[in-house]
Image (tube, rainbow, N blue to C red; front, side):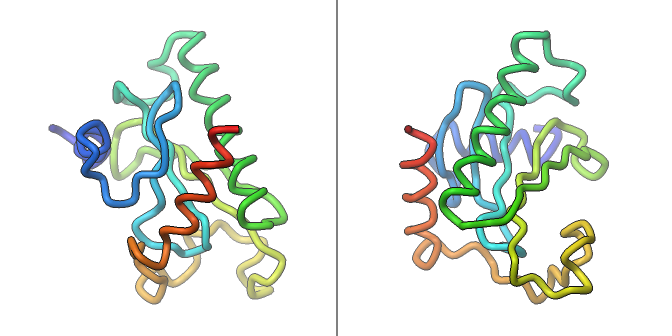
Length: 144
């Protein structure tokens, strides 16, 4: 499999992705490996495609709609003030969306910057035990 996204989607299909949240019509929701901001998730398309423009009109709309639905769920679960959405694909050249909650209590010097400016080395790793309640809450919101 050529990218990390391909490997993560395969793990989700097999039920072996450790931070799997839910299956949506366009793909898989997983918590970020680093919880830089609590509730940070990714939407991984299934099947994997190189970028958003590789999707047909209906599939593209489904992916974008699922991304917004995930953002709505994260807002309700985390109490975030807003959600940032990013699709980059520069390091992993396969479509995936970063769905990032932004909170009132972020440090002033980071609150208006992309979340990539946070210290990722100091961010908490995803933890199956401590993040179990977050995963369950997101699952319930996405099932609504």
